[in-house]
Length: 266
Image 1 (cartoon, rainbow, N blue to C red):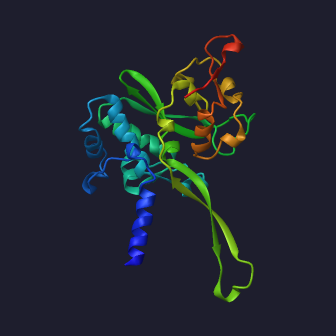
Image 2: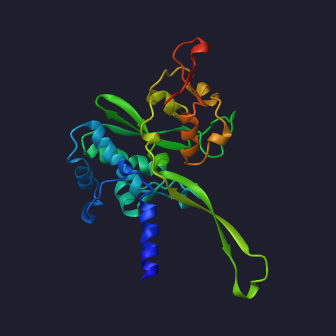
Image 3: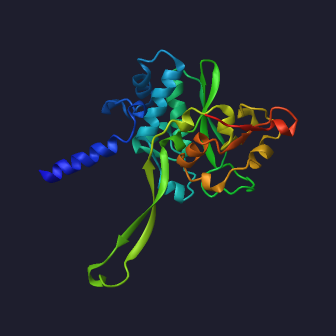
């Protein structure tokens, strides 16, 4: 009985870490693997584009886990939205394709964008050669919005495990590091404006940039992003930097270089 209540308390504490406003709508089991039915259920009571997008995005980031195994393997294997609903895990392209499919079924205009992101391993001055991330664009009340559901879902953390065999108890333990997904839902990357989003994201095709498209890649690569504020699939350090107004975001609006730098406030 004591163990039962201990488990219950731990479970309740873990579940309560997600603020009520960021929790997903509960969905019946019989429609969780059907894109069309799921989309209809999530948006049936919503009258505005923004409300529909909110319900869909929160469900995706609360339910779909990041596919760490494929991330580590650099796997380029693609899964359909239907398959993702069954697997309940995906890399960034999967998050995006599922969100796009759910939005389109609800009558929203949405798309998946492939581009460059300043995530784990990035150092200021690095030059981008290949695209490394995906995010979404969705039209809300006639205006395009950008969202990164992958980063909104949580982060990859390094979990250390210690294995000790009974016969070798007195010897040095076998310590292994393992990358695991930690769900840490936040709406930070679901609510950024265009210039804040550009701070960490640059589309491979400038047509999908919501700012001035002139020399966008040069501007993006030369943003003074501090390495300690860049971590794999994590929004925590970036959120802290924005809140404290430590960071600046660059976006080209006119040729005068003095106008390129603009303080980002929240």
